[in-house]
Image (cartoon, rainbow, N blue to C red; front, side):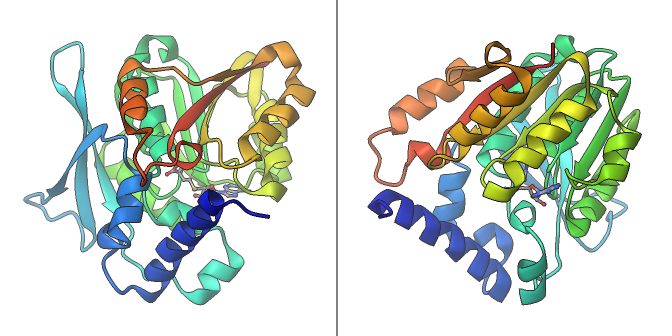
Length: 292
Ligand SMILES: C[S@@+](CC[C@H](N)C(=O)[O-])C[C@H]1O[C@@H](n2cnc3c(N)ncnc32)[C@H](O)[C@@H]1O
């Protein structure tokens, strides 16, 4: 039987989808407490962005990382476009639309981790899988990481079209954006053994997609490449992903890291007693995979 906590979590997630579908309120206000809870890490300041050229009719926001600056003491930020199109019932039936709802806490935690470790990524080739409508972490890494190559991807066409606009307006160097399903044989063979790093956040919750994700990471990585995966524990789902990754990459090559950032960890510890905070759903865990 499902526990009260997991029932509440499922109800909470459905409420977000339902309100988005009905478009009762703008996405940013949908189920205010749920969105806020899911995005409770508070790592970014988010301000509405209106350029002189008025980029387009969509809403644009400037996401600026709190308390982290570049080597030139400038703030670290990206312009992010929010998808405006109403999600139809058909969209929900035929596709995984979770990437068009909000930027989940795992994407934000992964952004913070990447930006704090920019030196690791210099001259490397990187792909983000399932980046949703923002690919925020990949966008920030492409903007500040001096990469050789960045490929921003998702399996949903609407999300990918939005990321194309984001890539253009942030003038991301050496960056391409592509529609990429993890089990697409054509894409996997085209990019086999290409990347030093594969990024993915909050992509381990669907039972039928965990093994395809592990397989894709294995095919896409070069030898000695690294998978950087952030996801909440969410029932048995993350553990199952880890077991599947261990079966492919070997037990010693998969690390599960709870404490990857002091600020995020301290904020998590202070929230542990709150009734709105369910660490299984809201705290992103870092899984590092090494391909040997
Ligand atoms: C919960 S969302 C996470 C989005 C983003 N990474 C974030 O954390 O904000 C899961 C994403 O995985 C994508 N996805 C699900 N199954 C996929 C597949 N088989 N191939 C590619 N993308 C997939 C969805 O389109 C969605 O954008």
